[in-house]
Image (cartoon, rainbow, N blue to C red):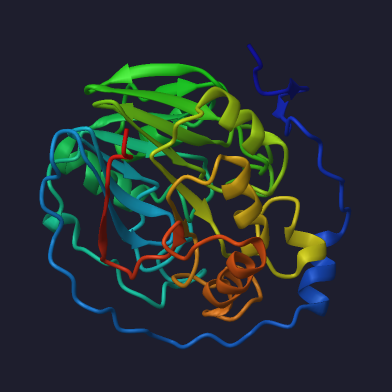
Length: 317
């Protein structure tokens, strides 16, 4: 079974991406950053209720944070309730939309998933609050438990790609992604990045985390041919010369959706924090164009409003 490539203390992508020396400096010197609003008010939605034991409910909190209820198991992905995605509270990318639901409005969380160590996916203040409230079983990639321990999370399950663990009534598999990791200028690729497949109560959900487009989606489809729901990133993709290796744009995400067998899909990682150069509404507008071009129905690949809960019906037959 395949494992993440690891050499000289650093992880690598299964399909190597080109090195871009000086890329960050070139981006900073040449970027054309669209202006985002300082604040966008959310439409109020009722708190998520407990889903049926054989059902799936997805509540979009914002960015890559979802409450997923899968076969009676409540799963929280990459939780971010802080005002900034940053190592400090006074600087760094600030969210323009508040979290769609208060942490206290969620039903009991059974499983916590942390895809990788970037600050917009591994927010220690939020993780500390989640741990204090529920102490859920926690699953992450290799090397990340030492970061989670700073939030009081002890005993996190660290997985290599394609490894599986059974926790709280769910089977969790860590899935390859095409990305990278770092929390400082000195620890690039020292910990593993990936996504998750969640299986519980006869239902199967794929959460991609952060990833560029590549053959990995065909690999996932071969191993998990009956996905009930996929959560795919559609934002943080401009400029393409720099971001395409590690972040999909909406056209890439539609290709990934088709590679996965076209399961019901929800877009994420957009409209909350400005990490790259595209406008706040560009991902949703580009998704509409990409869906039409590929002949994908809007009800097969949609976006939720922040705070909204979607119920996923069991397929006929």
